[in-house]
Length: 464
Image (cartoon, rainbow, N blue to C red; front, side, top):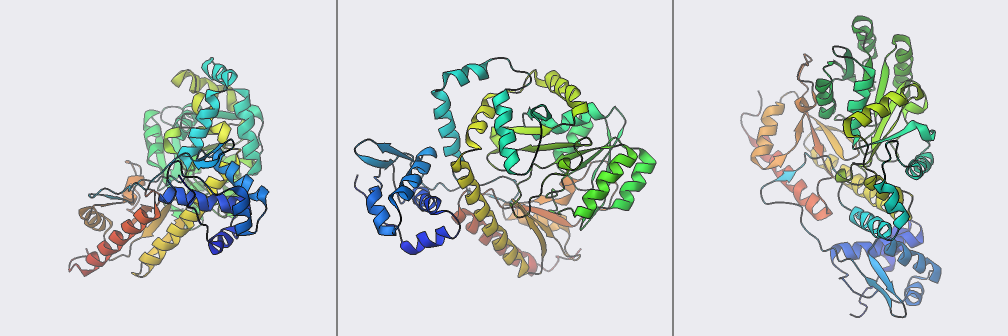
C-alpha cells in the first residue's frame, strides 16, 4: 500500500510543547493508528521526506520510528521502509445498556503494545524463560533490581531485601494484617476505605475501627483517642490520593501520624495503589519511617488490572515473617508477569504511554468538573476518579437509583464503609472516568450523565 500519511505542522508543533520532538512525532503517528487513519501494513513516509516536511533532523524521525517499533505499532522492512504492523481500529467500549462510571480502571492507550513487545522479546530469550520456570520463592534478583531502579527515579530508596512481590496489592494487604495482628485485635482505617481491605480484615478475624476524615486527612484527635482506648496494632491509610474521597493528606498530617505510630506502637500500611497524576504524587511516607511503614503499590491502576504485578516495601524486622506468609498462601508468586513488567517499565515506550494517560486523565477530570459545576455540585478530583459531594437536599440512594435507571453506574459512599461501621452515612458518590477506552466514548458517556442530571433536577420529589 502507498504512503498516505500527511502530518499537519501545527499539530506537530503543539505536540512538541508536551513532548520531545521524537516523542511528539511518535505520538501523532500513534494517534493516526488508534483512530484508524493508518491501517495495517500502511507504509510510513520515508524518514528523509518527513524530516524535510517538518524541518527536523533525520535522526529525530529515526528515533520516533524506533519508538513506534518498540511499542509494536510499526515494523521496519530492510530496503523497503517502515510499515504499520498493528492495526487498532476504534472499538467502542460502550454497550447500549450501560455507562460505566463505577469501575476504577485506566483507559487502554497502548498498554497492549507494551505487553506484546515484552512477550515477543521474552520468546527469544531462552535464559530468561528458564529462570522464570525455576522455583524462586524469594523472587528473581534481576526483577528486584529493575523495579528498584525504576522506583529510584521516583525518589524511592530501598534495599533489595526490602522489596517483596505479591499477586496484586490485595495479597499485600492480607499479608500485612496476618503478620502484624492476631485474632480480635483492633485495626484503624479511614472512615471510607477500599472495600477489599474490609474483606482482608474479616478473613483475619480482626476488628475494624473507622477514623473520620477531614479535608487534610484523618481526624487526629479521634485517632489519638482510639489509640488510647483500643490499643490498635495497625493503621491502614491511602495518603497520596484517598480512596474514594481523593483527599490529599497534608505534610503536617503525615508527620503527626508517624509520631503517633511511634508513641502508641502501631504499624502503618500505606496503600499507594490508586493512580495519581505526577503533579499530585509525593514520595511515600515509608521513606520517612521505613521501620514503621509497610508500603504497598502495584501496576494495576497505571498499566492494567489483569497484569497482577504488585510490590511491597517491608520493614527489615518483618521481612522474614512477611515472606513466610506469602509462601504459605501461594508457595511462590508467579514470576512471568513480573518478568514482562521488568522489561517495559524502564523503556521510553512506557514513559510515553504514561504521558498519554496523564494528558487524558487531566482532560477528563476538567471535563467532568466543568459539567457538574454548572449544576452546583462540589467535587474533589484526582487520578482516575472524581469524588462528587451531594447537596443536603439530595439523598445519595435516590440519586444513585435514578442514575441506575438511566443505565449509569457509579459507586456510593456506603460501599466504602465497614459493614460494622456506626459512623453517619456520607452523602457522596465516586465517579470513575477511566473506564472508557476512547475520548469519543467518554464524551458520549458524559453527555448521558448530563442528561440524567437535568432530568433528575426536574423531578418534583428529589428532596427527601
